[in-house]
Amino acid sequence: MSAPTYDVVAIGNAIVDVLSQATDAFIVEAGMNKGSMALMFSPEEADALYAKMGPGVEASGGSAANTVAGIAALGGKCGFIGQVASDELGQIFAHDIRSVGIDFTTAARDGEPTTARCLIFVTPDGQRTMNTFLGASQFLPETALDREMIASAAILYLEGYLWDPEEPRAAMRAAIEIARKAGRKVAFTLSDTFCIGRHGADFRDLMAKDLLDIMFANEAELLALMQTDDFDSAVEAASQQVPMLVVTRSEKGAIAVSGGQTVTVAAEPVARVVDTTGAGDLFAAGFLHGQAQDLSVAESLRLGAICAAEIISHYGARAQVDLKALMAEKLGG
Image (cartoon, rainbow, N blue to C red; front, side, top):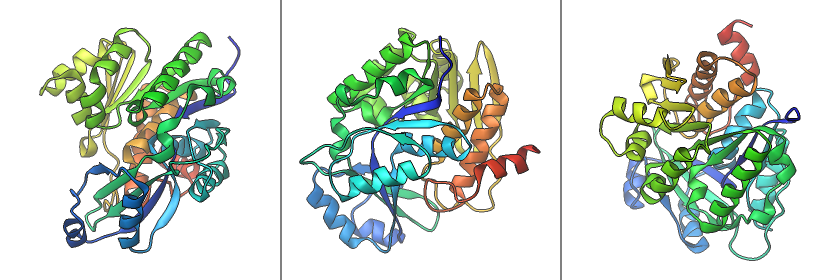
């Protein structure tokens, strides 16, 4: 098996995030459920809500894209595969993700729908309320896969959100096969409980068929996947079906279970939680970067915790400090 030329290649929704501060009253008036993610089903609906937003910040986003951006900031070599449209937002996404050093080779898609966008309203308590129009990101075909990139990555990272539409789901299954044939690892994030509600049987099947090496979940997602209300039971059951189980638990830190051994990490202290957008994505970035660099599970968990703490201390899902310098400061070298 040849040495990998990428640390991580991710497949996920190619979304342009638009973040804006909002009051609790605005959330209520707009009919949104605070702290949740809701889908918008037409560009007209997205345009109408966008018009009501205050000043916003635009950046390439999407869960897996946020993760590889974090890994790139840590010094890792990454690629991203995701579908944009031939429009202005598609150009913004492509330019933004390439500007942080990530290889992005997916050709833009002509015609409707437009590039995906996520309108994120951040309230004073740091909670984010997301409204997403998935647009072109739902139409990633298997033919768009950069097979050489996937086969050259130490870890293929898949986003559960993208499992919902049929076309990218088939593409991700094909990507798993490419990675497996190349002798690479496959990591998967469950993304959200609504994904598990729709595709939990599929996810459990991936585990049962030994197609996943690393699975990321938060506490609620793990309970939903394993169909139990007992956290310890869920961990025990899931860890018997996947070589590496990583579970984030907000202020309670995170755990990883591998080879029958459980490793825990405390949450990094944060002066004030400003915005939780991307916390799980950046935790995965730190952990995967550690694994790609052959660090221990404990060291990888610590990297994840440090990255997550940096992200929730400010608005947006991209680091606002030099992550490599932050790691040197926190880890002493």
